[in-house]
Length: 209
Image (tube, rainbow, N blue to C red; front, side, top):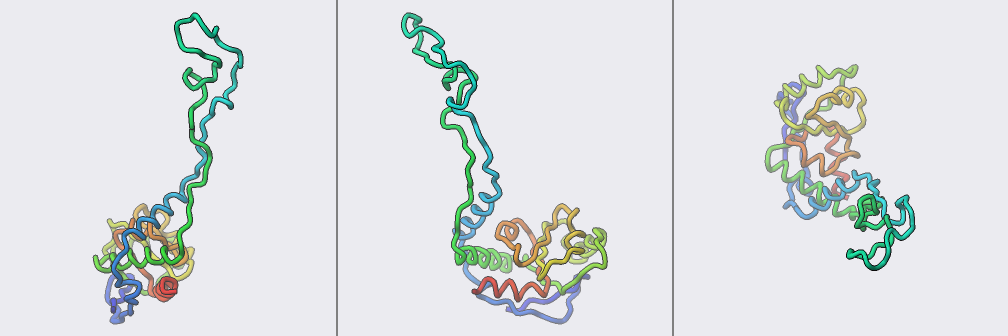
C-alpha cells in the first residue's frame, strides 16, 4: 500500500512510503474503538464529586418533635434526608473512573481507526519539517498549503519538537502529538491526520508488536 509523500507546500515530492496493511488495511473493530474511547474519557474524569450524607451533616441530634399525636410522620433528626438541609441519600463519593484495557485491544482500536481514516482519504504523509523558532504564522501557512486551514488536524511527529508544538498551540483546530502520545480519541476527533514521514516507522512498529 503506497502513499505519496508531500512537502510542506502541499506538493508531491516524487517519493512514496509503504503502509503496512496490518495497520492501515484491516477490517475495523468498532467495539474495540468504543472501549478505547470510553477508557480515555473515563480517565479524564477527576472523580472528586462529594455530597454529605446524614452522618456528616452538622446539626442537633435531639428529637425534633414528639413521637405521637402530631398527625404527621415520625421524625427523629433534623439531619434526615426528608428535611431541607438534611443529608443526601446515596450521594456521590470520590472515586476513580479509570479501568484497564488489554494492550492488544488498544492496538486493535488504533489500527481500526487508522484503517478507516485511510479508506476515507483522511490521512496525509508529509516530509519531516521544523521551524527555527516558534511562529504560529508559519504553521498557519503550512496548514493553508496542505488544504487544512479550516479542518480539525492532528499532526503526528516522530519525536518531540518544541518549536513545532509551540507554533501550533494557539491554533484551535490543530493538535500536535508524538507517536507515544497518539490515542484513539484524537484520531477520531481529527478530520485529517498528518503523519510526518519519520513517524510512520515507529507507529507501524508499535501497532504490530
